[in-house]
Length: 104
Image (cartoon, rainbow, N blue to C red):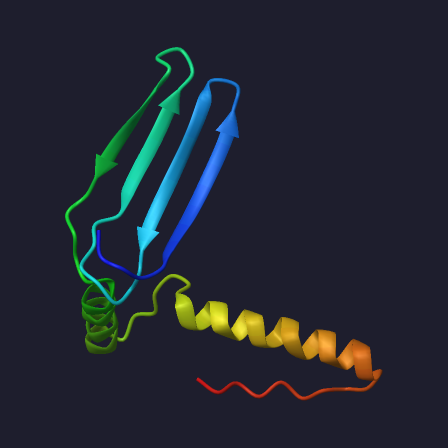
């Protein structure tokens, strides 16, 4: 694997664990799923074809612009939610209204 950050989500249950590993958006590194089955006492790994997440996201964006159709929530929506949460916390701390200014 190349250097960079990865995002991981891990779920624990009685029968084992499953871990989804999503690589950095800057690389063509394939996402993978690691699964530990308690009855087998071993890890198994599933890999997917590596694609540039930025290139794939841009293709979807261009297609939405071409067709005029909106899409499912994306990273920008997440940034907006982060901004709202930040401004709400700031409003509470300062005990005054804080305007929400989207920078996107």
